[in-house]
Amino acid sequence: MEVSNPDSPNWPGWARWGVVVLCLAVAIMLGLWLKELLGSDEPPPKRSLQQITLIKPPPPPPPPPEQKPPEPVVKEEVKLPDPAPEPMEKADEPPPGPDLGVDAEGTGDGDGFGLVGKKGGADLIGGARGNPWAWYDAIVNEAVNSAFQDALSREQALKDKTYRVVVKVWIDTHGKVARVALVDKTGNPRVDELLEDVLQSLKALREGPPADMPQPLKIRVTSRA
Image (tube, rainbow, N blue to C red; front, top):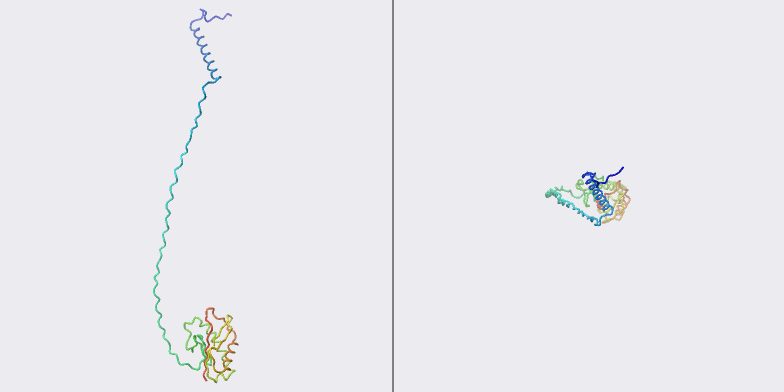
């Protein structure tokens, strides 16, 4: 088979132009391919670093001012003056008789020999009002009464003489007489000795003295013939 030449007059005009366009298209495509293959001489565009700025959040609002708690209301106490104590009527005291006096506020009725108790060393007539240790004074009064009763029953000479003597007595925590001291003398050594012996040999009381009770106890012994 024989291929005809495009320049041959047997080819129509449009066929010849089609061949030309086809060849140009092939050439352009080949040039673009070579350009992509060989690369471009121009340097690639620089990459720009985009700086991101962080925006700080707004500061927190300031705390509310501290509120002081309300101050407590102080109630003022109005102190009323203490009422003046009413004067106590003093009972008329009879003249001293043939009684034995104990320097303690006794509450008993005394014994057959008239031994009674009073705080301060004086003869006691009446009760023990206002004495915080009256209950213990009664114990001492009872013990002394019993001891002197026994002494008087054994010593008849004691009842036949007139004497007055004050004796100081210390009592320990167990209720035992710990110490005896004659403040004055009766004038009869035998009577003085007997009084000391009676107190020294006195049995322990059924209770010890109160811790706040002042000591010594003063015992005034008075007797008349």
